[in-house]
Length: 188
Image (cartoon, rainbow, N blue to C red; front, side, top):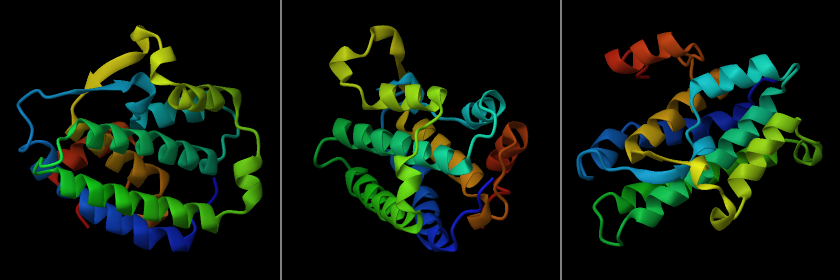
C-alpha cells in the first residue's frame, strides 16, 4: 500500500471541511426522498473498496485513489446538473466541485507521470470504461437512483478510507465506519 503524499492532506482536509455541511445542503434543500439517476459504479462505497482489494491481488492504493477521483468527478457533475441555477445548494456544490478539482490537481502533480500511464487491472479498467461511456450507450439495467446526500456520504467515507494518512480517525472497516458516522465520532 503506497502512502498518501503529504501534499494531498491540506486540499483533502479542506474538502472534508466542506463535506461537513452536506446534510444542510443536500438533505434539507431537497424534497424528501429526492434521488438522481447515476450509474451503478458511481455508488462507490467502502464495501466496493474492500471487494476490489480482495479480488485483485496486489492492487495498488494509487489505482483505487485514481478511481475515487474518477467516480466522484462524475457524481459532483450529476448533482450540479440537476440543480436549477438559483437552487440554494448550487453555490455550495459548485464550491465543493472546485475544491475537489483542486485536490485532484494536487494528486496528479504529486504522482510521477508513469502512474497515469500504467495499465489498470482488468476489473478496474472495466469500471473506468463504464464511467466514461456515453450515457446513451449505457444499458438501462446499469442505472440506479440515489440521493445527493447518500452520494456525498459515500464520497466522504471512501475519501477517509483511501487517504487514511490525512484523516487519523478514518477507517475502511464498514461496520466501524458506519457506527462512527452515526455517533459523530469521526469529527476532527
